[in-house]
Image (cartoon, rainbow, N blue to C red; front, side, top):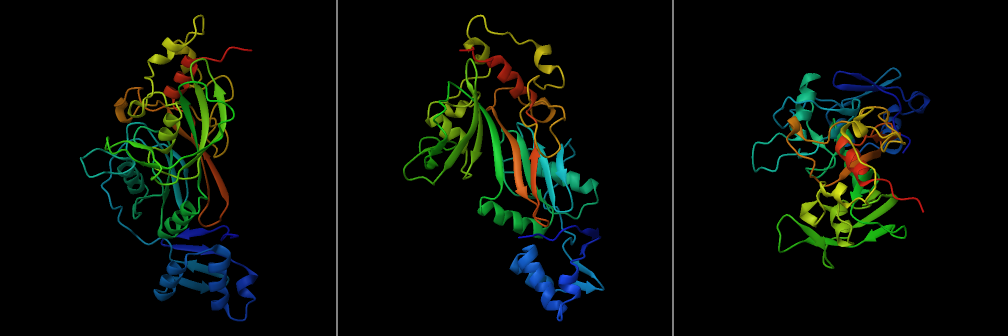
Length: 356
């Protein structure tokens, strides 16, 4: 799809100028429908509803679409700091800290990312339903994508089903992961002995994890991992199954973060508080998550959850890069999310691998 190009928002209406494809057409209404469905890629059911409700208007050389009707948030706002990585009329991408679930599970009154996003919308005027497009585990950090209207939700949901939304993760794991390990293709199912855990199982759902890059350390390996499927705990299950659990992942047998220094070779580098916090927590070498999305130079934030509620012993997993096509323009966007300080510190504690 070519996408709809630039737009102007006027209240509940989106306004665009498609040009001669409409103005020169003998039957403008038919040309508008063709442009919306074939060029822009508007979902058919939404197009039908807009036509039925008068939500498509042609005035002079301008096309107006009722894409921004008022909607209730659907969840109570919670007023906490929110780090916005990208936002426009269609999408919101925010950093999820460790210790915070994306959405409520019905078991209590904890504040989730959805609650905080609802507050963010309220500050900007409200009228936007909270719609997350994907999730992260509670103790995994990284970017989460939200749709700000029905058009964006339908389009991004379809992109998710088509595996057109790409997520690159950084994981710090136990042991040396061999360079020949590039793809993990192993089905994942529930562990009948543990309600919260998943396991590799022949009868499970298909699950494919790709290892895009690696950095071998003295006492572990940093992996850049991409998912072809989105099974619960997929990265954690796959790497644990192969004998390389994530640091801090007690559920799947990972070593505690406190073991990192103990496992380093004798004579290895020591890490002081100032060594990893200098320069906002960034490493002197090229920093992970420094490409795309305009966030590469922003300082790393602490890896703990709200109000410092979490210690550093979480799974060492961070969403480093989120790539997707903008739902209206179809421009490819890459939104980077710098590493949290706790993972930068862990990597330095594990130390550089000795030179051959």
